[in-house]
Length: 113
Length: 110
Image (cartoon, rainbow over all chains, first blue to last red; front, side):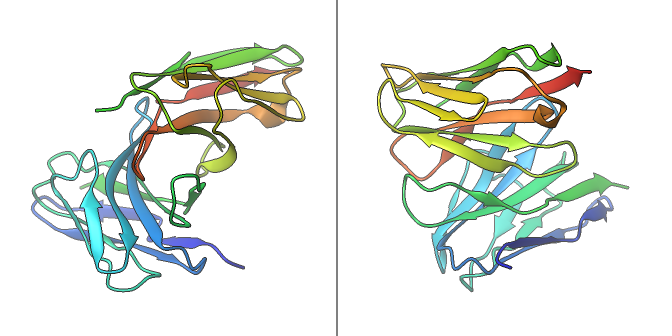
């Protein structure tokens, strides 16, 4: 079955540590996205990529980094510069274009130890 | 930047009753999408509206896009326990980014 796989489901970060969240899709979608979800705030866009080897900052990119070396993969690194990383992180993908729905993974819940 | 406001934040509904959630954008939208997130789950695409004044129905759900393309609504009739979850609207202007509302979390009293 085609879909988006995020791993791990739960992740714990120590102070000063970088952690990387995995996102893989086999839908052959060009565009991929990372969102952060906090209670009562909906989804906020961190980074997005419309094509391999290219990505753009979203609304809350500070303290995060991404790469897009392969079409099917869009890992997100939460760096130590992100002072409030505890949140639910959602990865999504879509066919490239303005009128396309986004398909979401099951998410990774990141907590600080 | 573009902002999408969604109200109410919470909706407690008696089973069988109707309710509506509203979305308003600070800018004109090219389209608006609606998603549903079940408790513990991820957002799932429901529908997209593109045309001014457009109305679409999915069984008991009615989606509407305002004439000015700055607001939208989702109306659910005869609420069932399967309607529990958080409903998000997401508006798009002239780029690839979606701006999500904060969502309306629906609980149902049987």
